Amino acid sequence: MERAMNSLIRAMNEADEARLKLLLGSASVGIGEQAAMYPDETVARLVARARDGERWTLIRLDVNGRGGAGGVNFGVRLQRSVSGRTIDSTGKGAVECPEEKFLIFFAT
Image 1 (cartoon, rainbow, N blue to C red):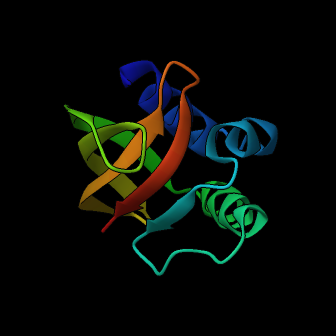
Image 2: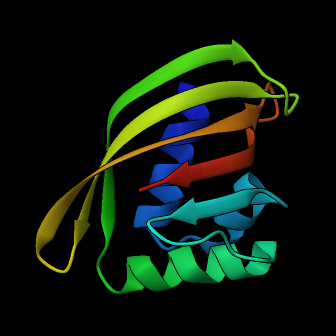
């Protein structure tokens, strides 16, 4: 789980579109906004954020065991650097393990 989250953060910070597509697949993702309707839209949003200078740092990850979505549920606290300010962001989601692919991820 920790490896998957660190991989997502690294891909986001590096605007690595191919890696984001691999990690997010068809996941429903919303970070500080409504979830995208399509997986490619999610990836495009994150790549645009990275290119605009947004950076994420993992503060805390809580693994909560198997959940209803079929993956491993987690809670997360991120620090997001956006336009010269820092946002303390909390979220939750599920990751398919051991595949390390996100099923769902929402954060403020």
